[in-house]
Length: 292
Image 1 (cartoon, helix red, strand yellow):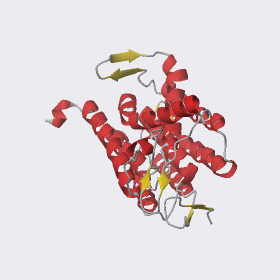
Image 2 (cartoon, rainbow, N blue to C red; image 1 turned 135 degrees about the vertical axis):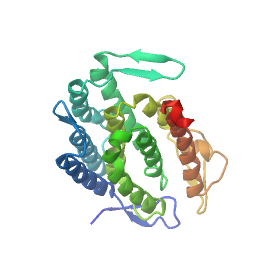
Image 3 (cartoon, rainbow, N blue to C red; image 1 turned 90 degrees about the horizontal axis):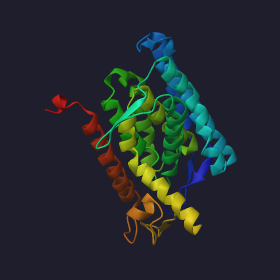
Image 4 (cartoon, one colour; image 1 turned 120 degrees about the vertical axis):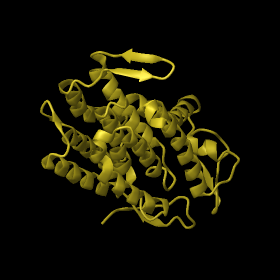
């Protein structure tokens, strides 16, 4: 049923079913519609958080399918997520979400109307694209986003029901992905990227999201700066057993720079980095009485 893609870091490069992220898109959409019709999640000012999230995920999956089928150029992929920001802008304006962001050591930044028409689109565009750019190894596109989602869920108990079912399915896909049995493809990475961005906006966890995705931002910045300055791309070599790189042009090549690691060791190292930043975000945002 699904097209197959070669697993570049396995002996013989076996073909693996690709694009299984569409299962996440379909399941999550149905799940969120059921949440809406059941009335479990409250509707504020006539705007439904489950339906808003479902629309965003549907567009993320559609955009990923286009990329899987047509291999879209980055100049198109970079700005296409802006369309998914439209339902979030409507939700934020009608539901009167907080337009300020409180950052550690900096304080509270008030964006006013700029939050609706600049900050929300930037959040969606940056989060979706940076998550899509951290991949290439079995588990990176699934395990790391799952860690970010779990961190956000810890901080948003009232909206926990929105992501409970989708997270369980995503973890099942992640387990198969780590074993090299499936790829979620761009369909999955774009859908999960927009899921994270939309969920953080709906739950008003902008600062926590920013801290959590710092490894993603670092990876994308390193890749883009290297391409613009040296016209070279990040590539790690595989000798049949381990992955190693002779340059530092991405998070993957940085972790494996003159340090041969198996695929799972590299994925574990990067997942640990993401987990550390997510933990910091959770500790910063949790109320201190709870920690005591």
